[in-house]
Length: 488
Image (cartoon, rainbow, N blue to C red; front, side):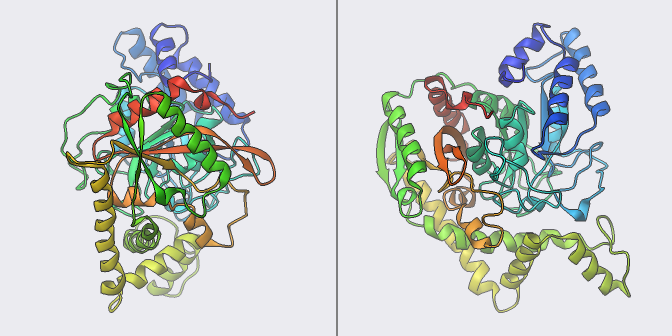
């Protein structure tokens, strides 16, 4: 039962072949037996209470497509009953008095919460090694990282500890771990999913999205997650839509843009081979490959690592030891309490980004760094628009690798932050432009020490083109079985 897709599980529940309580118990038992460190907080009683409520709805024919289906939430979404730590000592025992908008929407849909998932501290990282609660292990190879910051979400779905999970993507944190763990994940257009109750890292970049086994499952999850929320000033006022409406459309005539910048120096040969193989499969499905250029791609790393730390330094200033969060036990005065509480509560990567952000926002450097980065951000977005928008657009979607390599070994890059940052080269530009992007499994590469590790194909579309991306991904998954492969 744990191997079924979200849609298949829903059908089993609707047909009364299994109860929500039985299904939740199955996954709770799998979580208890796991050694991946994917979950930070599990409460069996809370989960089973939700499952019993779902069973009542199912028995009363008051059930929707997701009623009774178990999911897990990245520990960046606040929850009223489960602890919310954001992977940080700063929020070690914090329990929110309210639910995030995303959690509210899934609760209304009748899903059953399995628990909270490990993540890089305040979603800052590409390997899930920055969590105060320890690194998550990749279920394909426990000596490897799962990717970050949503590593717990991707690892849990890959290991079948949960059929689906919520995640967030600031610079690639849905797509990269989905790629490295061999599952499907989508970052929707910026503003499509409410950020209310999502602990902020970089407010102009953070976006919630789902990770699941298939594109079809991701569409079902997006149906519940998206929608206008007046509590979020960046939420877009758009009508609800059915993201699964186009899944079965033919790909005949689809034009796929292949950026030359995604296939240059730095891309591992095994990753390129898997991605090229996927592109060839799309040609068999009727698509046409078009060579394009996204010339500002190489600037996305310096631009992102100016803008994101600047916003992080502002957002994290609220954690001062006064109102909530960690407070130092021993201090002399208020200033000393601020310093010690933040020094003890934040990890190294978070401190590094706060320092960088404070520097680029400081007097005399704002114009030289932050303002220039914002100008280049606009140029990056214009590159995509030339390719994807208008009657003379070059292509319908863009495809390429998600990560330049397969998952690396735990500890390989912990002493070299820049090497970690460079791993985001193919995902950052999409986030800076606010475009939707997704990762689907497309093969395997060779790990340095321990055999095969998953490779993901990135699919990027124009604003609000999620239904097309899911259609493209679904058709590929109907023709291949990479998404069905499971770790031992």
